[in-house]
Length: 173
Image (cartoon, rainbow, N blue to C red; front, side, top):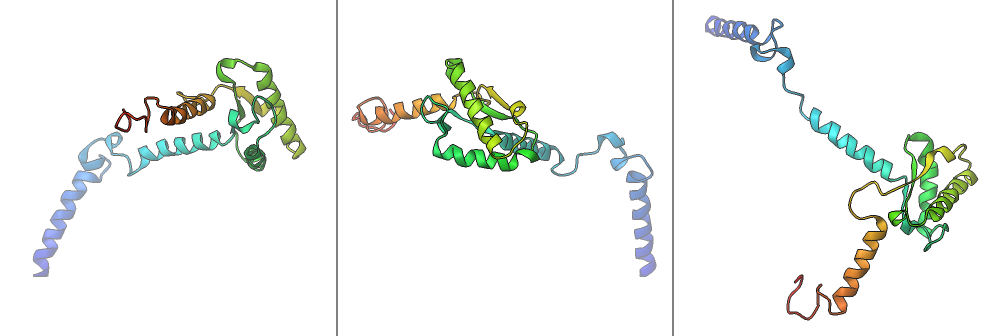
């Protein structure tokens, strides 16, 4: 009985070795036509997304400053400390969100200077070359436009506009 199974096992081994081994590649095909290992293609995509998200941690948006000044809002003070702790370990620039349509370049420069001075007080050397003013990275709404759109939607909702609770008998009409 063992001899019968041993012969079948030997025949299976010889046929499989002639198909896939012997340098001819995956199931007899060329080696360059092999499928990628599981997750190899999508992992690169997710790593890029993660890197982009980490870079976004170094953006100071308009709402992190008090009104139309270069003074930090309370949340920005925590943000600047987090940036200072991570700055030496990452290659990302520190970005100050440019004003809407670049309307106030002097304010943008003042905000840049405030960030540089705050980081210098925390002992970060030569930070000037890493702090830049730039438009919002993501397409679509800037932080300013998003805040304005939110305020408009809230005021329309309760003032009889075409939004929710407008007295027209339905939501989202």
